[in-house]
Length: 58
Image 1 (cartoon, rainbow, N blue to C red):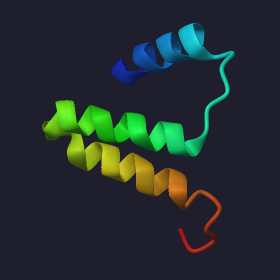
Image 2: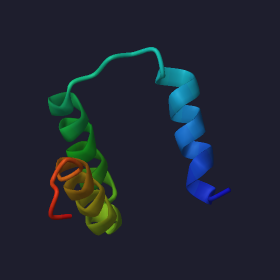
Image 3: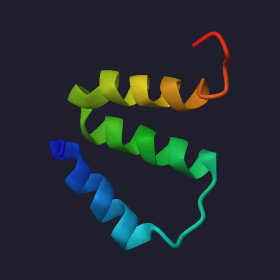
Image 4: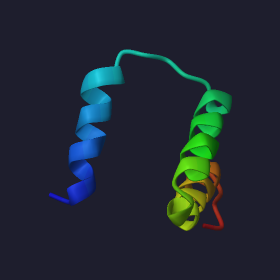
């Protein structure tokens, strides 16, 4: 188990029943980076990975 699994499991447990838009998620990610600028690169990598999930070239 990775350390991040705990946070993912908490997210799923607390908010797993909710439906959100990608616009809402993008805003939360921007807010997080504004509050935690050291995480800009990992958040950018996650956003890019999510954006390209269906891209056959990646």
